[in-house]
Length: 398
Ligand SMILES: Cc1cc2nc3c(=O)[nH]c(=O)nc-3n(C[C@H](O)[C@H](O)[C@H](O)COP(=O)(O)OP(=O)(O)OC[C@H]3O[C@@H](n4cnc5c(N)ncnc54)[C@H](O)[C@@H]3O)c2cc1C
Image (cartoon, helix red, strand yellow):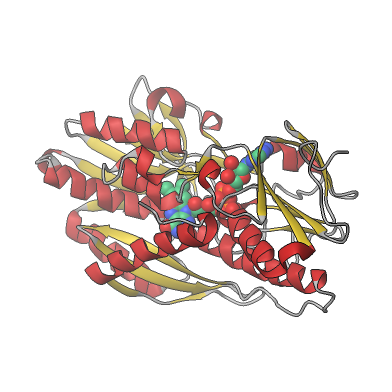
């Protein structure tokens, strides 16, 4: 029970806040709590990765707009004296005692926050690793970039393989960006693009956004295949086998020359082993982000809170949980609650981006609006990323 590297000394009264996972949710939570509590809280942030990459940066790398090195924000370069970053893999979580085991030692928390996201499993879809490409991991996006670069035209299938999946607009963006890339390379006339989605509409909470995306598909000749999933690939015959999505009917096959897939998502194994997950994900109070264990919170993709798995929602949940933790540290009654609101950017290609505001409130149907697409909103999206890197890492995104 060492709470960190030997030699560390903590103020006797500091509340030990241990944050597992330095992604969208963990970075926001650690920044907020440390910034607002000062010496009253000792914030420890633990992650196994070399650095943070925005989800949307994977598309930038895949379509050759950015080099891989330009989108990796190394934790070693984080300038935040009040957050102690530990580069380690979390190997055990006991939520009852708030005791955590990692490859860099054990940690005990007064307040524990689980922000470990969703793990991706391309191997869970038969044929995907051998015969296709997933583009949701950083390494997968780099391989998909190479495959797109070498592609000489033919049938492209962009598809989701299971639900839930992160960032529901991302497959639609991918289809639109494939179109843009093939057109720029003079390959569009001898290519077909199909998009297989489990949902009935591209962006279900926002009818206006769904209409705009479907109109863009129609204009560009992109085939929209709703309420279906790709269950497996047969690499020998180069076909994707379809299953049912949100509707009843499945069945059928789609031939492909290039398959770009969204892989199966699961809660990280260490979370499953901890007893925190129920039916696959961690249930939380949708207003307070508390799990059923006292002083244990969970935010972001690891939860079953009911919002889409997206960074903006992870960030909003982290901000609400942080406000409650700060109140507790300062001896006040927490009164902040999560509002279920998030604003997503949606790439249409040709440097045009739309903004979709969505609100999810438990027990009510979600509502959403649409702004754009426009070139001005592309600049807005760039500023969104830059602001977060400045706030979380303490330096400019070069
Ligand atoms: C292609 C693509 C495009 C996207 N575009 C957008 C977008 O435009 N807008 C948007 O809002 N969202 C977008 N997303 C979704 C967004 O990236 C995620 O929903 C968001 O990162 C979730 O935040 P999180 O904090 O819950 O988890 P994550 O950001 O995934 O962070 C989890 C962290 O936990 C760490 N971790 C996991 N297990 C362990 C362990 N055992 N030990 C130590 N560390 C561990 C991981 O290394 C990771 O850093 C996109 C995703 C993809 C794939």
